[in-house]
Image (cartoon, rainbow, N blue to C red; front, top):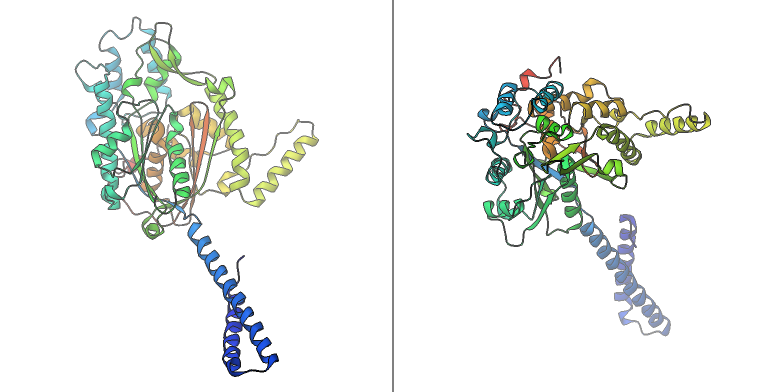
Length: 475
């Protein structure tokens, strides 16, 4: 039971009156006075117990209510300039050595590259710059360490965070899981506490960056006051996913995936709200793996010659559109304004009355969000999301420009896109942002943020040296 302030005030008046009456009747000996005294004593006891109970319940309620989950800050890894993967460099790499038995795979990859939307300033993994250009486990570890250490070092420096303050570490890598794990690598590098909670996610695909933030959100919401700060590290391994075979569906990954890594500090500590960037107000994850076509749309397997690669099927774009529609059916009622919901319901009823001849109206998600980070998985994926959600080029601009500048950095891609918004100075206090990403399996994941302060320019923004060139007029 909870009591309003007025109710509690009234009870305090009764207590004072009862105490005064009690003092007056201390000297009374008349039977009526004695009976009245007993009545007041019992009433006083019940009133005190009731008031104390209400206070205790109120304190427990306030203490158990989860604090908001905040993005304190984040950092994106920017490799050195000598790691840039221009078309000339990529072409020379393909021609170096006897990688392919025929010219057909090289012609195919050149064609994909020209249509990909990637520019000449994306970054390639270390092994491609070595003399023998052979991907090895050593190179894969080097790629992981360079990205993780750079991003985390930068994040800790600008948040003034001590490693001892970190309660949870979540490291996600779409396909690379060495032993010891990457989360153990972080614990060792930064000498974290023995009781730190670690989570190592792998095989989750490009959605794992959004998914790992969702995991941090759920841990911080349910972990009590003892767990306050979660370090989330989001990376990928291009090295061990390079495909040397000739299966076309597997050669596509060689053309669009590039090096990237991001680190984010998530907290539920209310004392840090004034220094935090955004509040995470909603998350949604949907898994569509029950469908065979969705499950196999992007699939790691061996080709006919036993060479391992990730196959991106021709059905991938259709699957992405279909599952996106199912995802937004769940998300829409939770985020859209009432006017858009009424409009959508009306269109559904109209469709039903027409016998299916009419299609329901797609809700306008720009009425709910000031900024939208569209999954930067590839040119075709961005265009498909634009078609499904009726986005014009101004909405998909950050995704298209991020793909051009950094390529598909897999799980970390939405944070490079967020950096684009900040570098352009578009984010303001009170703005809402929607991040959406797809992943193998097939998964669709969403994060909804609310900006709680105007971001300030940061020296480690990966767009600092190139933002003046964007947006491109031709993509």
